[in-house]
Image (cartoon, rainbow, N blue to C red):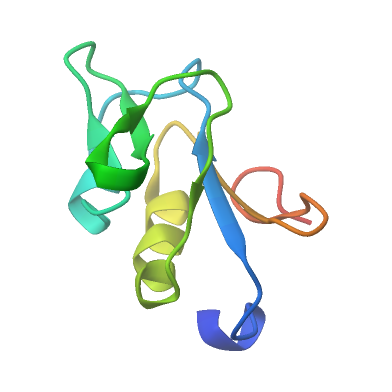
Length: 100
């Protein structure tokens, strides 16, 4: 099953990073630099509007549909298992360590 089949078009998703588990490997920023970036502290953060790093604990960023595969690959490959992708509607995690 492809990522697009698992996340129907039009279903809003968001992503957040648990910095307590982040290992700073930067794999997420390599896969999806439009969504993730490493800060000077060596940890990854999601980006908001205007590429602003969202550094508040639990801060979320929308997952643009064209970048969904890259964001999901980031979650799957993250050695710290700290990337969480969830539906906006019910906050259910669909990709990441707590996905059902």
